[in-house]
Image (cartoon, rainbow, N blue to C red; front, top):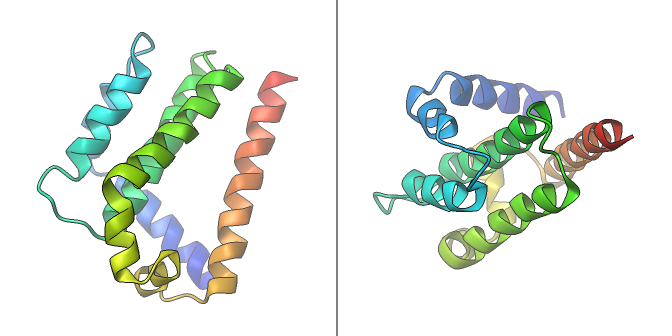
Length: 139
């Protein structure tokens, strides 16, 4: 689990310093978050190249949208649910066939070099942390 945590931190640091992705994040506006999300998501895969790094970047972007909504006081439950639904819709419409062709979600191990149990533990931790943040904000 430690190795996966180190890998995730490294990926997060790389994404935090990616000027192109940060520019895309700056485009998120409160008046049209859905349009902005889909515009940015399409930009991530604009050249038709799919890889696990870009899939992770999509989730990172959604995470940053959620954080931005919370920080701006826009963290309504419908907006947060909407962001999750947009990710699922985009993955279903544009990325799922690539994921299936790679062997499904379990193939992400090739990106992290981790076991399924480790990936499940990390994913569960991320979900619990996000749920806690939303819960604390809405108290």
